[in-house]
Length: 114
Length: 106
Image (tube, rainbow over all chains, first blue to last red):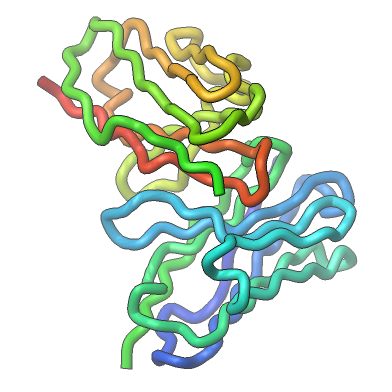
């Protein structure tokens, strides 16, 4: 059974760095890529970053300078770091895996506020 | 980046057929996928590669298209299908999502 679970802080101060972890079970990170997708309250989905099965990384064009995605295959974990957080980064952050985002975590709600 | 344009909302009645469109600003071949999202839940894959039904998804859902124009159909609509539907392309980098189409009851 495939499961993805996001973890991280629920509150981050403006200008600080967000660190999120996606822990995967049921498939190998060397077989399928994992992406991060976010959704501000009441708004649509926004793809933000991906790491492929081969370890290549891809980033949202607008957010690219603030993002870093990495992984630890031995722990089946994918990490996202986003710096210089602002209030508009308040969102539910999902990780999604599989060739076509077949599998999704339940998400972690991150609020940026002082 | 590839912009995906969906109509924002549609009103439907149970038993009807509904079609949602997604237009891409450039070709995405057939790498268009459709997701259903209900309030408070994560998205769920329904259709992959334009027309392929994901595992366990009822045959009432279908998709078609290639290049820049895609459609997603529910026939017949059931009350449980009230949700927001998103298209997503994985042909061009970066990947992008449409703005979502919210199905509402008439």
